[in-house]
Amino acid sequence: MSETEIEWPWQYNFPPFFTLQPHAETRAKQVQAWKSLILDYCKKCKLYLIDVREASNIPLFNNSGINRKLEQTVIVSILSELQKTGHAAPIDKPKNRWEIYWHTLEEWSSMIYDYVSNRGLQGSVLTLYELSQGDDVKDEEFYEMQQEVLIKVLQTLEKDRKCELILSDDDQGVKFF
Amino acid sequence: MRRRAGLGAIQKQKLEQEKYKDKSNEIQENQFEQMSKQLEFFKTNLEEFASKHKNEIKKNPEFRRQFQEMCASIGVDPLSSGKGFWSVLGIGDFYYELAVQIVEVCLATNDKNGGLISLEELRTRLINARGQRKEHQEISKDDLLRAAQKLKIFGSGFNVIPYGKGKFMVQSVPGELSMDHSAILTQASASNRAYVSVNFLRKELSWETERSQNALENLVNQGLAWVDLQEPTHEKLYYFPSLFNECISA
Amino acid sequence: MGIIFGKKKPISRVTAQDKAVLQLKQQRDKLKQYQKRIALTLATDRELAKKLLAKGQKDRALLLLKKKRYQEQLLLKTDNQLENLETLSHDIEFAQIELQVVEGLKQGNDALKQVNAAINIEDIERILDETREAKEKQDEISDLLSGGLTQEDEEAVEDELAEIIKEQMPNVPSTEVDVEEAEKSPHKTKEKTKQIPKEPVALEA
Image (cartoon, rainbow over all chains, first blue to last red; front, side):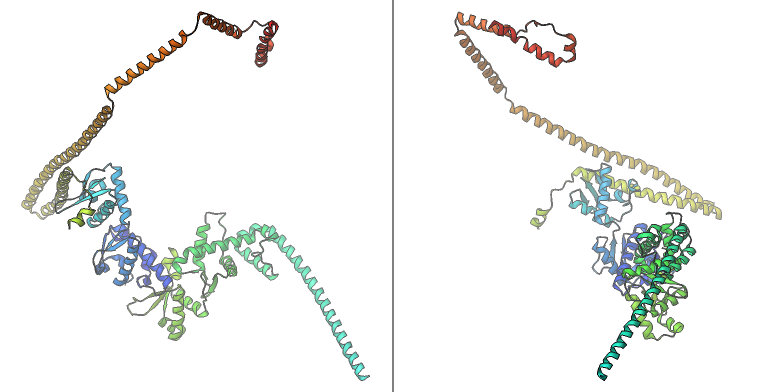
């Protein structure tokens, strides 16, 4: 995932894009653009976790070409906007670490369940490793999904009684139904 | 007696005045009639001319411009006459279609530029959109200006703002843009950087801080300018997406 | 505590076998990870050996290649182990499926038994007996009824029957039927033949 592969929108090179706009309407457009940019970027780079404190290490929030950065408080407020639609969630109290869901947990869970149904894997036990790292899922979008996120996705499936997680110190697996 | 004579004189005077009035009316009417006849004659000729050169008018922007001028000189507006002869000609249709397309482009780009678009960008986008259709009618800036001017009638905020020499911007959101605003746009465009600052305006236009700030903040509040606070000099910069190259080509 | 947990948590559908399979699969995952790691070191070792050779450190290169060879053997071994694991977990899974099949058969068998139990042989015999008895009774009644008529009555009945049969027999038509016409309009001829038998009856009277 080299950075050159990312197609930046025009806003990325527009210096004021990195300053929160005072005018409400303009700001709404700006935030909207940021929201889709963050999701697109994370999707392309398979980035599941953003630590706001280290955001300036990610080119997404730091355009060295025009010497502009997005402030941490602004990042948090945009991520909070994403949280409203289920596309992000903070995983610590001070809201420093954020999980990014370019597909919502519900979307992910139906994607995984579709995969399971298509392979006739209901009734089988799978390890979390083979579900996210195995050779069989190489072409699936959830390939290399972060374990913490995977567990959250499976938990939403568990609520619908479509699977049961087997989590202990030794075991990390899931049985589908 | 004197009194009576006086009265008579007044009446006489009144009578004369009325006669004069009648006469003048008569003359006026005559003239008007003649003028009308001439105009009518000219109009018929113009119509004949138009129907003869219909295709030429549609295809050739220069031809179109001159034809427009001729029409304007006798107060005929082929754009607004949707009925009768002119609609058959389809000249009004040409501008009508163009105007609709202008609105489409303005709405589509509104999200990026806040409703302000340069005539050049408008033209590029329009030609791209029209490209496949018809025999690729050539569209001049003059056509665009005409069609855009017509949109003012809707009163929904369509406006044509001159900036710089021979440059125009089309505004598609309600809001008043003063001379100061177009002066700012001129500066931003001339600097080729799509932005200005209070200092910059002081240098180029010798405006006082107050004046620049008012105008600039006003542009921000209309959603036409974006604020940048990260310039290393800590100077507040005002950017115009409608002049920003990457935005124009996006 | 017990109440809080006991109320919500439904009975787990994960069996002991499931857990065993999971264990095996996790072993397999570990082996796979191990393979990945070895494959990676193999590649880097080869590069390193090349570099050492270029520098003229033949001994060290050789040593490195030996290590590489050893790891390659390891890789082969893990392949075999992986296969074993896979077979085993498949076997368990298949055994579970077989178990389900047996379970299914058992249930089917039970159902069949239940249905059969509902059918009592004695009941059937009794029902059949009763049916037979009812039939005999019916015959008796008809016999009794037919036996109530005298010889004369019988004859009269026979005569009446003969009369009815005669009436129903079609008469030979008195007029010749126009074949063509008959063919042309079968409907019409039908009407005629219906009318014809009536005439002799009227004459007789």
